[in-house]
Amino acid sequence: MLKGILELLEKRGTLSVLEISRALEVPSSALRPMLDFLVLKKKIVRVELPCSSGCAGGCEDADQLLFFKRLDDSSHT
Image 1 (cartoon, one colour):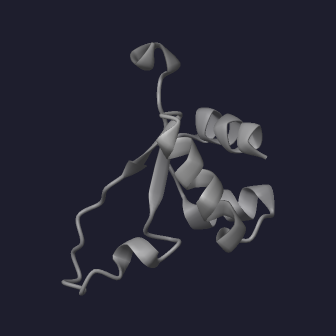
Image 2 (cartoon, rainbow, N blue to C red):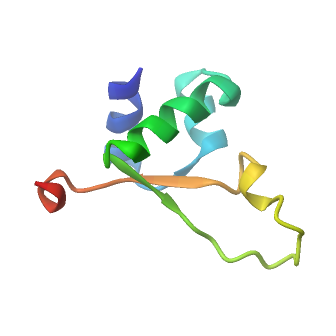
């Protein structure tokens, strides 16, 4: 599954949790720990988007507003 996430991000670029979840047919609740693991391993990075709605910090919990992208392997060797 981790390889599938990496391949998807390599192919399609920056994607939201919702997009990854739909593409891989995996619930976002199961996907989030895998994404966190890949961030820790420096395989992907979380993409911060500016919050334009003035929300009280709930944006990062929304699957359609939390994005990830693949890191270039050569930049972390």
